Amino acid sequence: MRGNLTLFADKKSYRFKFQKKENPLGVGDGAAKSWNLVANYYDASLLRNMTAYHLGDMMDNMPYSANTRSVEVYVNGEYQGVYLLCEAVNVAKSRIAITEEPSLIEDNGYLIELSRYAKENVFTVDCCTYEVKSDVSTDQTVAEQQIGYISDYTEKALHALKSGNKSDIEQYIDVSSLVDNCIAYGICKDVDAGWDSYYLSKDAGGKLTFHPMWDYDLALGNNTEAKGIESAVGMGIFDVTDCSASSNSWLCYALNCDWLRQMIVERWNEKLSEIQTLPDFVTSEAAVHQDSYDRNFTKWDLLGKPIYNEPEEEAALATHQAHAQYLADWLTQRITWLDNYYHSDDFTNGVFLDENNKAIDTKNAVYVSILNYWGMTGEVDANSPGFTAQAGSGFGQALSSGLMMQEGHKYKISYDYSGASTAKLSYRLQANHDNYRGYESDSVSVAAEQQHYEKIFTAGTTDFNCSLAFNFSGSGEVKIEHLSFVPVEDEYLVGDVNADGTFDIEDVVLLQKWLLAVPNTDLKNWKAADLCKDDKLDVFDLCLMKRELLKKMGGV
Image 1 (cartoon, rainbow, N blue to C red):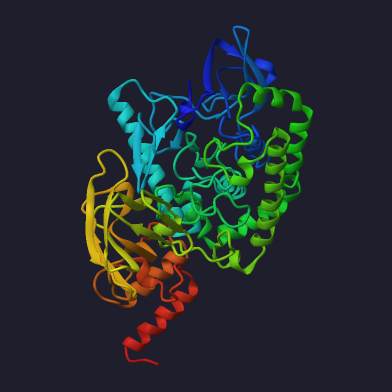
Image 2 (tube, rainbow, N blue to C red):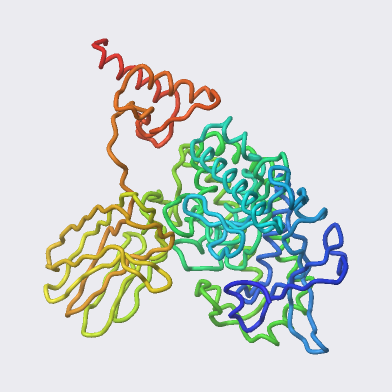
């Protein structure tokens, strides 16, 4: 059996291997031993994965996308339903065509997966864990060197992307594949963008390349776990910020880079006519094989009822045809919205919009986290964000989960609160896993008049999956608004980019060299050069820095 969450479904997904390389039903470009039968249990259209991989084929700057075919499966004569027969993601000439030299280090190829489920051959870069999925050496010493090499390369590539420096980025990253990847994820709006199944490869002598697309049954409008993720409007919340445990730093940093956004627009214009065929692809596949899809739901009685976390409107659909049309309509709306947005001043200027066409607060992890309430009576306000709760003698808890915290970094918790004086309110910043270990906690006295709470602390540990839990007791209503969990940057001397404690001509020269992409130029404190206060560095910052230095020296 294969999968993570899908292992708990009644209809199981499978991975199988032939004794020798085979190509069942002529799928893809070549024979191989490993294949998948994907159940698509949580996707009543049964078509989201197939559609995403078809999109991957269109975006041909990503070298590989899994080839698929819907099939009806029988085991020992017993009907099992419709499955997606597809190529397994592995290294092969007809799949991820990279060098396989497990005894070498720099001259070996690497297939890696960003995954919070990573277990073997694992390394961590910033807030994310990765797993080497291609073969490493059976010699433990060599294997450690291989993992160390690809870990170091991945870290350099990510930090180059974060800097926005074009020459540094192009040194480590296949930019054309990243652009296609950004467009594909922009269309799919995947809730798991930074959690699991995000693949990259690096061939010997090559650059980090973004492919293949994988696992989209909970994408394309089929999930309500995070704010606005099901809507055809707005950016994918995890694609534009790196402050939540489900966020994807690669997409975030790429979209925050001016010249990369321009490349995305140019590539979108080039591929739009193909992308616009996706809705017809869905309805055509559903119509041609309608009898097969109908038989699946005779076996699995899932229509017209909730399956997992899909929107209520979708869950109520009583036929497979209606589910396929829902997906096609969502794609039509999504493509139209993206086309308008990519050509807007907002996208040009790096303003990211949510499902209400409002600017996303990308600094506030609570805004992009999963908000829950359980216990007594309560209600979530995802837009504020905040909670309204009715305290009582039983247990009631409001929870913002999926927050990231790094040891030694400063963070600020803040919120406005009001309610009945008979109610008691406390919070606990804790691990969202294992024994729910606590990191920070506090309590406040509630009053009818709104009050503000704020606390800055330095993290004593690193945890990439925390939650901020509020507990209510006593009696009466408690209301929390403008709940925020944000990183706090240390104070610094404006202009002091080399961090030597002085702002002088050396800082101006260093910034100028960095903007000109002079090799081996490092800004120890790039924020000190952001005089325009727009979270990016350009010639305007350099001009302001020169003016500030002249003032300091007594000039005009």
